[in-house]
Structure formats: C-alpha cells, structure tokens
Length: 56
Image (tube, rainbow, N blue to C red):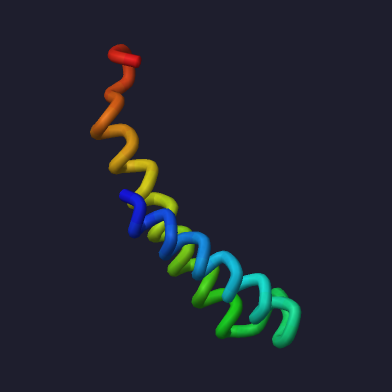
C-alpha cells in the first residue's frame, strides 16, 4: 500500500503542474485526473478490504 501512496502523491503533483501549465480543461490534465481517480479508488478498495464496514 505504501507504493500506492507514493504513486498517488507523484501523480497528484504532476496533475497540479499540468493544470497550471495547460489549464484545467486540457486533455492532458483531464487524463491525469482520471488516472488519479483510478488510483484513489484502488486505495479506497484496499482500505475497505482491510477494514470492512461493521468491523472497525
């Protein structure tokens, strides 16, 4: 999971840089945003599997 956290942080920084350089609606920014969403969804799924609802 640590590797996933690092990937998320790296992609988040890249997304911010790209958005500042190319704009919020550029194709590259939108693509990076979607890829970051996938990583974040994966993280949530992993966390849910470690701590199922009702067993926290």
